[in-house]
Length: 612
Ligand code: F6R
Image (cartoon, rainbow, N blue to C red; front, side, top):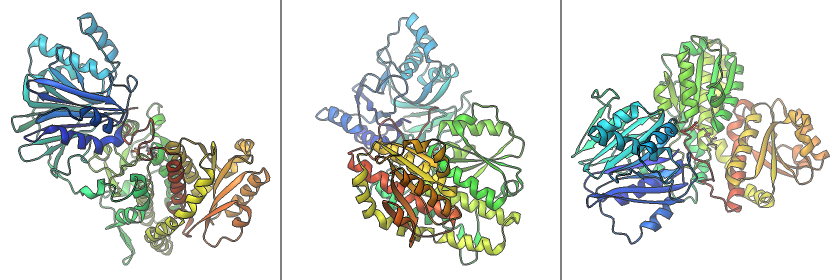
């Protein structure tokens, strides 16, 4: 959460910073701000709201500088307003900081600084940090980087920070711990950002800063040291990301682009891995620990939100194909329990961003107890991909819409491939069944394409239900996690209350909610629970509930019972979530658009949840 950018070079910094902030706006959009060194002093401009609101503040102002920092905020400490917006400037007006993360011991530091005469205008932990650095720098007469090192040794929490000082206008200093930071290396210029998207336009050479490293860029050079002041030799990565991939490409919203891009993103995810002709599956990222996975006594899946839903589907798949018991845990719960983990247990960590703080912390806990961690991550070079022992990237391309869509289907695809390969090597799947599932998997992009053809019908259905106050989503077996995912999609972008339930659990409570005002979305594709879910639909109808059913094509029975039906192509039931989730993504998208909600940036959310 929160996006940070920085620039130092020969160009005008302001337009670069604003463009970078726009690219990072998905990480938070409560307020935005920039600070630059102008004529020997710090100019700081900030505004509650989006980057567009900040741009209005800057309109007509003559701001000229070739060094600056910028921030787009997802509020943690203090409400979203102009004062709490970043950057924060220190009491003597010398230093300005931007920060992504949380300083946990800011309260005691603040009290101490107040007793020394410091004054604070905001409620933020960040303003405390910059004044703490100022205090150390001025009392011990230290360079900015030395003062930062001393300060950080006394700070508890997570941070990605960048600081400029009016006394050293050719220097930009940055550090990270627990929050991401990427340095872009241009020709005589440097770019800092929370991820590579603001950088790719200018250079494809980047360095991912490691935890507790401090970066100094000064007079056209840079160096990185660790927290003990020991110089580090960074690895320079060459990015393969295309600029086009992070732009809307003619779609009204990123979410629309991402939903409709799924035939391609699922195909990308299988490319070079699934060979239909040879009937082979290769996953180069999981080579050294493939045997450990096959021989594992159990698998623990750690994730949050939509990624957790993908984990629930994977549980069914792994147990069925590999006959290995699986537990799916919310990372946020797991990390604060005292979980039983033994040497050699396999943890599969699923994350689109690769930066989710709870998932990262849960991984560290599992690793400390001897588990082997396999990451299933989308963002290349992200923290989770780096702390995992091995893993498989999604290769779905950047997901910018805050509501996860293409990452979910890519997660399912990767997890399916991992399970299928392990089952074959382990001998828990017959060769002909393996080949059949492999073929079926290879057909998924075209089936998703077909499922997307229901878009117009779904738009009509959305029109009818856009003013509903509640929705219930029901599914069984492999479609139960899809019901959860459909409900999550709807509530997060349209702000309609929605609940996902295993259909058979309905009679244990939620059935009391059903009346003629309650739309019930039932994922009722033809599978081993078909007859049971037909009975569940009848139970809803008997109580005058309105049923919107997602059914397999050519289903003759359910359309006679349901009020509305949406057809999806048939596939093997274990692969059905890849197809049956598509109408639910479209339903939430259209309802949100019709309600005038900000689809790509829903209120209170952020794409990358880097705080616990
Ligand atoms: C929902 C959504 C969130 C994320 C969750 C985990 O649409 O996007 O629920 O799935 O915050 O994020 P990652 O996958 O980045 O760890």
